[in-house]
Length: 323
Image (cartoon, rainbow, N blue to C red; front, side):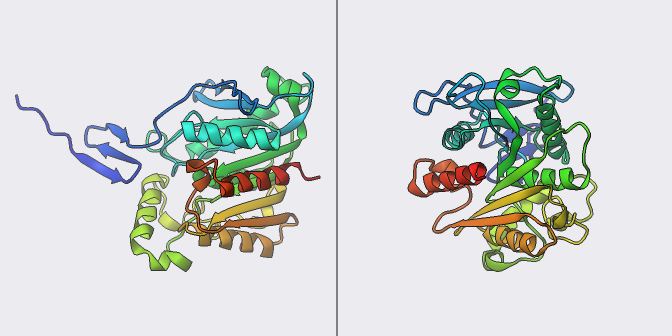
């Protein structure tokens, strides 16, 4: 018998292809590095299982301590990748979070949430919630067993952070904790860090209207990741927090937010609109925005040693540690 030809069913450049036999070929973001004891920064990392039910794990990071019981802020981090690629062990993400931990002096939990299309949204958002519950199990008197969290986390200083799609996850997690408190989450969120957030919408704004080719590419990313059965498409509240029917920004469950945008990023104007909408809302917290001129989307991931990336990480560290 002749062989059956393998055809591309869905092509989502530059990320992946889905073939008619169900095979998924990820084109980028597949490399991994093991957890390390980094001699340059003094940051140590290790991998842990968060949920036996879903097999969701996380990579933990801890800087050099001044004493075995030193208490540090907790940073729960969500990586980017359009919801469909990458992981905490991807070399660029491992280094980026390592650098942020070194500069800001935090214990970090970098969540390896489940990816589209094998696990359709909102699986990634559910995994973020499970990560908060898991972290909360380590508050004093809790049932958690991870020593780094039990011994070294100050649960009065908990932050959420993410870049691109990870920033989108951080936003929705903060909204959820502000509007639907969970008795299994015993701490409050002090602040969230949104690095080049992946927010989008049907009607173009700003530079989106001037670059139809790039807009079509970003449209395709969300059309691929959009939850099955969603009738709202590019204006689904999961990707457009300013869309009709999206949770009101006044419900943000933290007291501080910082948004970073990059001048050449087609997602820049959405990040600016989000910041402006948050400031104008009835939310009673404090919002900050940092724009990095001359750089593109998540530039700090690809050029972590550049002056602009180093300065941005320093600003984020200041945001975490300000009193």
